[in-house]
Image (cartoon, rainbow, N blue to C red):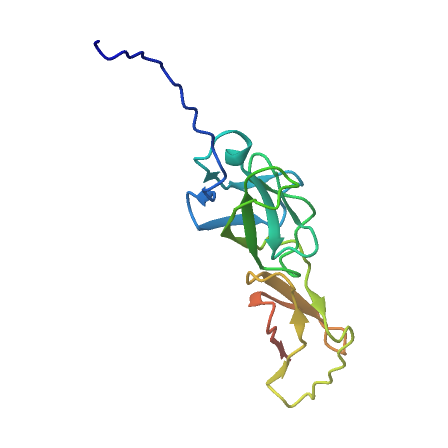
Length: 193
């Protein structure tokens, strides 16, 4: 008697497990921003890819460190970093922000993560007026001297060298002597008789 046989088709479905961590397209991002930038100004967009399927491949983002005062904000879905509060060069000149990409559900303990760093440099604007460290300077010139120098100290918190002018009047009410084009960090004015 000939052997008997039959054929059956079996379909095997391979289910995905969360075995891949997200991977950033760049591990470092560099961006510059003016201290006068408005809240909501976009600075840079980070991106990480996860080849896993479904929620295992869904990537979200957050800030881990480098912005303790909340001046910046990272959109958890898009990865866009924006200005969240007014910036001030005289307070912070740069931020080194560590961002994290994570996959899976927000409550999963099987999430995998990756990290990148965003270097944000704040650009200074001329938003501060000079001020004298000593508002009153008394100076007496003797008639015999040909030239006298005084050095009232004037500070300008703005980083960029700013030009200013200084006007002074001699004690005998002679015309105002002024000088321009002197750096605010070291004003020096010659009083001539």
